[in-house]
Image 1 (cartoon, rainbow, N blue to C red):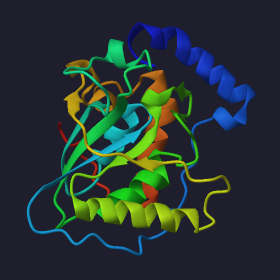
Image 2 (cartoon, rainbow, N blue to C red; image 1 turned 30 degrees about the vertical axis):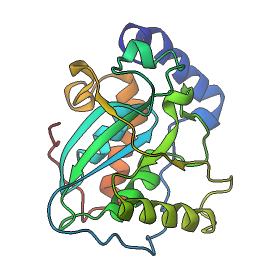
Image 3 (cartoon, helix red, strand yellow; image 1 turned 135 degrees about the vertical axis):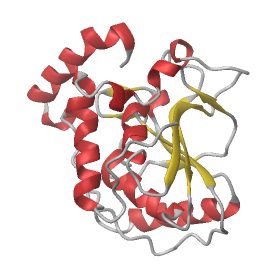
Image 4 (spheres, rainbow, N blue to C red; image 1 turned 180 degrees about the vertical axis):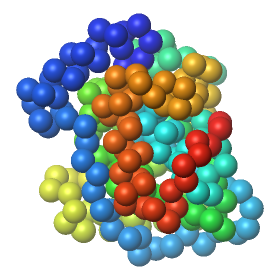
Length: 225
């Protein structure tokens, strides 16, 4: 829901949310504290998260202490390049995703997982998030090493048995294929366009929930890509 199409589709999405509460801005949840902590060596680490429109994913992670970079982009599809126009067709198998670089001495991978499923992505929505529908908006964790893979698998299993979500957990783990940074106008979109209707309705509440639920790791400054 970007560029010119947004000016047509966003009012429709807002109207639909009013008429159908299930489509309203996602409600934050208190995801369980991970039982399996990430055992990560010193030094910056990289992780990739797909969870619907990357504007909101990037916005939240950009306000997490220990995150040194958050870049919107495309992951998981075929081809040697990816653009928004290609991915938005929904047939390249790419997902809108965010590449996060973080310092595990400040915030561990399992901490990021809890933030992700508390305030960013609903793990029960299949191939969609909120008003955005299609496989390019699927929710997926993309571990970049074996430790992240094990932590992610353990947390998804813990989530499934937690009782926090009423519907089945459909978020999945995907192997890393290739990450393509999105076009410049997508980077830092929430910071540069705070009054954009999509940001104010769908994404600003996620950042507010981060501040409310995770005050110890929330930072007011917006992390650059």
